[in-house]
Length: 430
Image 1 (spheres, rainbow, N blue to C red):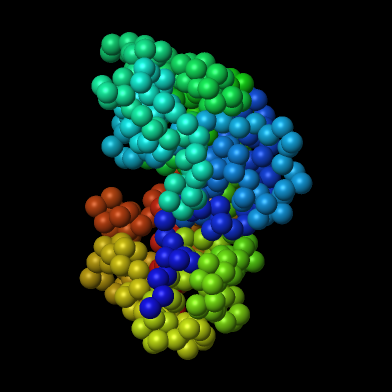
Image 2 (image 1 turned 90 degrees about the vertical axis):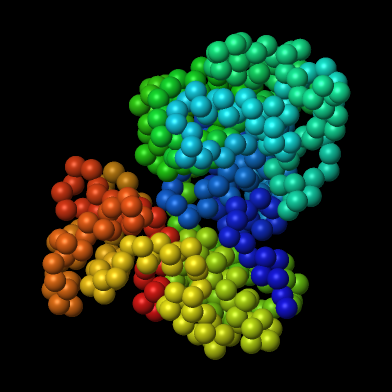
């Protein structure tokens, strides 16, 4: 039995050896990290690999250039590359506003990524150590002695009662003064905020980032495009900070999707192989979403184990496609699918029509796909789907997903909330 996780994972890619493609984005990462004053903005659709790229930004920031070398960019790495201490925080939907985000940062005791681990205090010794990518991805410092009294942050970084913003400033300044410059001899502190789009009220975050950004403090924000524009709206000067740090993560080209599978084969060390025809088909039906390539790859290994085979050929992949189209393969996506369609066969057909509709492109953002309802009506009539206006509300109801949302200021236009789910709706009809 072969463990699919050796070559494929549905988790964020932390290990540089697993990271594939994105050469131009990695090239821009080098530029933005070596620019003293900038904000790194990583944005794109769900499922395109934003968080994995953010983890590679962190790796490059601490001096691990393996992903750059794998991408053939070793000659573009500056001899005097700027190195950072890093903080990595993954936001969640429980964070209501800026103050709550800062409070979380101030209290995060994660020993690999947390801000608090860098705050200097008596009895805490911080040393650099050799990292193992998969087990300690993104770690550049490790606390080896927290002191007899636990985590105390009052010696160098003053805690201002009831003022989380000023306390955060004090913590950052203390880290820069005592850790970045004195102990670790780095060029700066990099604070990465992942899943930024889930924060409900982002008012004030842009101003805070602008006021703290300097040649020794840099922020990286990872989320969907609209949320980066909210930062600019919050503080106009943020736009200038983004000029050299804007990283738009689009769906992968087909050859990079194929490379995910080739890299997995290397990680399996010959224990399992994929036919070229299967590699091509997986890359095509995944439509540029690396998350789906990983999911389908894992399912292929499971099926090969079940059939006691070491080669994923057209027969094995045919069985996988049957499992996908029947809803057996991906339970999470299937639950979302069943919530959306309910008990209605007509709604199932309508969802497929919408998922298969060619995306309209806008002149302002060539990535955002719009669904035109009147086009769906024509196809629905051909399939004798009745009462489309009664079927649609469930698809945009928060209680059941939602699968779709209305496009503001564009009457009759909708878009899928999760583009990966859109592709899954097509795969259910393989």
